Image (cartoon, rainbow, N blue to C red):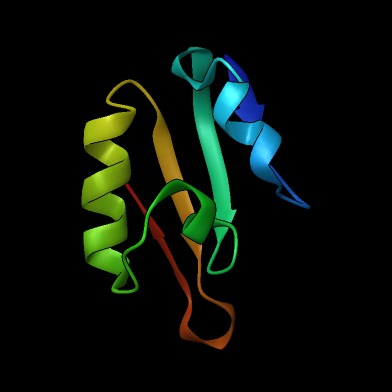
Length: 69
């Protein structure tokens, strides 16, 4: 299965974590801002997919649902 990581609550220490080892990265709309400046869900997933190509990215959007790549 690998490492599942939900960085909540998120802070600036996240940039020092070895996220390349994460298999599942679970983020909400607020947490994604620490990893990407994008606001559009598809652009967020694109940026995170390029940044962490071996991870499955799960982006939750509250009442707007969820995306997973």
